[in-house]
Image (tube, rainbow, N blue to C red; front, side, top):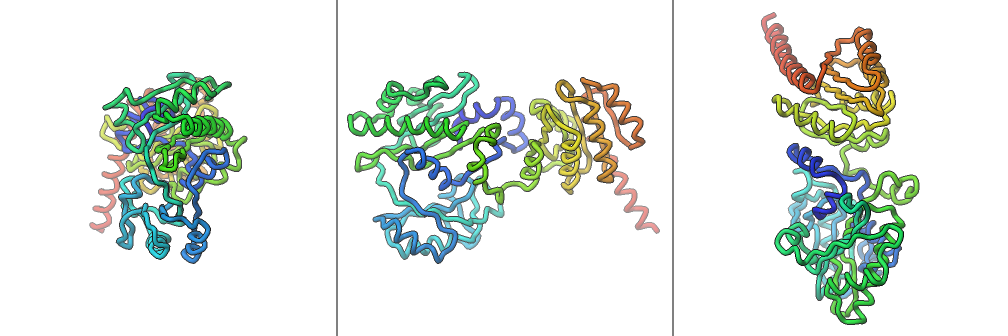
Length: 439
């Protein structure tokens, strides 16, 4: 789990509160597997365990021979937490294993690779494991926590550190706040020797030799943070080993989507096989989509308005099928693609469009709605509420389209009509069935 400050940096408290009631937590679009994050760390000079990755059981022997470790850590590579306590569809338990015997390592790989891992963060069907990371085990003497992230409350990057690593950082913040240190950073100067030394001492790296190593690691973490346009680089734990080394054992990295044009190589690493295909599809058209379990499809501009729309749908007894934010610079084709994604979801029985035109031109939205309704042969109820720039022209486009579009003057009326349209569809469907049975 990311720290509470990480989540705060990525989205507002209002965002989390509203989306969490629907079982949804917003995430950045790009996610990397653990071994990929460690490769980035290693490339920036941050000390990590020696490791190899296998995608074929026949390569296990080669990987073990390459490492030649006294003890090995075997980790299933999936985008989900709780791997150690997870279980596989073949009955094998634990997506993280430790072994000294190479034969046992090979057996672990055989039981993990090609099987589905189920954890507290996956669906009941789990995630197919296509890669296994085999790493050299580290003899940990002490665990600490370090995170660099962009924080809105500080208007820039901050360094968060705690000597209580290897555990839930939210619990540390709540129960022992004195063990949490937050250092605002100047984006131009970052982590210099003075800051790194102060933080290293706070983390408990007291002896001069190991303190120097900790300072070196902290400065390289800052280099990585800047070089890859990160929003978050979280190391939990950053450990002191029994050989007086400082090693990043586990890492979580979040990236700034706006920097994709600079980080093409990193964004090309993303494995989208574990993501909802609708999210992947939407991202191709710069649409922000998160699927849910309801039956009212939502098309809204702006995250805040999207959350308010979901709230009021729930208030009137309905259930939203998605969070879909088309953004402030939406074009007609994006509206069409948004409609296509919504209508391809068999659970969607009605669509609610709620747009407040500031930067967005309501007439553009209206043209996109009409084009999508006609080209897709829309057969489910459509409720539209538009307000703002060129709203009168937009309403005229809708009224002259000849399409059975239900319009609303405000959000509450729109939500009521959307919920009512679902209920009407159910009644009509029931009556149709009764009629067929009577014939």
